[in-house]
Structure formats: structure tokens, C-alpha cells
Image (cartoon, rainbow, N blue to C red; front, side):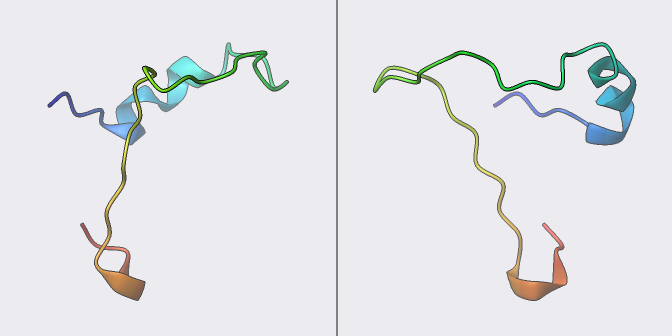
Length: 43
């Protein structure tokens, strides 16, 4: 499983467009899941 450190990657997002991408996911598309432990926000 590949993990991405959000704080390190923040600078990379500055060059991305702010508009919504014109993409339609399919049943074969990859997905990501973020799990937190209830209301604490801790993983």
C-alpha cells in the first residue's frame, strides 16, 4: 500500500487547476480510503 504524506505534498498542489477535473470514474477505477477513530481525527 502506497502512503502519501500530505504535509510534504502540499506544495505540489499549488500548480493544479482549481476547476473540477472532467473525469468519470468506472468500476475499474482506483479509490482511496481515509480512516479516523471517531471524532478525535486520529488514525
